Image: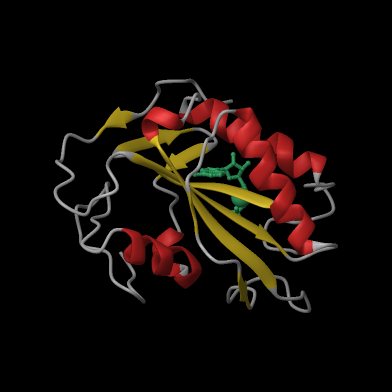
Length: 175
Ligand code: ADP
Ligand code: MG
C-alpha cells in the first residue's frame, strides 16, 4: 500500500540538462510476444494518463546477473513524459503499471522476483522527487546499474544528477 504524498521532496535544483521536469518509466519483457507486451504498455500508459513524448529505441538485453538462470533475453524501453503531461501521482502511476503487468498476464506467484516476466513496468524517476514508501521507492533503487536505463537517460539529459544523491550519472556507474 503506497500512501500518496508519502515521499519527501528533495530540494536540490535540477540545473541545466537535468530531468527535474520529467517522469521516466522503464519497460521490460522476456516472456511471450515481447514486442506486443511493450506496445500494450505504451498504449496503456498513455491512455491512463502518462502522456510520454520521449521513447528510447527498444533494446534487447541479457537478464541481469543474479536473475533466475535459463531465462531468455529482455526487450527493454524507456519512456519519458513531462511532469505537466502526467495526470497521475506516483502511487497512481505505480498502480497503473501494475494493472498493465496483470493485463499482460504477469503472475507474481509463478513469475518470481528475479524470474522471467511478460511485462515489468518500473518508475525510474518522478522528476526530482525522492520517495521512500512501502512498495514504492523513487528513484528506482537499482536503475544506475542498468545500462538500458542509464544509456537513454544520458542521451536525453547529459549532466543528469541522481535526485537522491546529487551525483552525476555515468555510463556503467554504480551510485
Ligand atoms: P523488479 O522490477 O525490481 O524486478 P518487481 O517488478 O517484481 O521487481 O517489483 C517488486 C515490487 O517493487 C513491486 O511490488 C513494487 O511495489 C515495488 N517497487 C518499489 N519501487 C518501485 C518503483 N520505483 N517502480 C516499480 N515498482 C516498485
Ligand atoms: Mg518491476
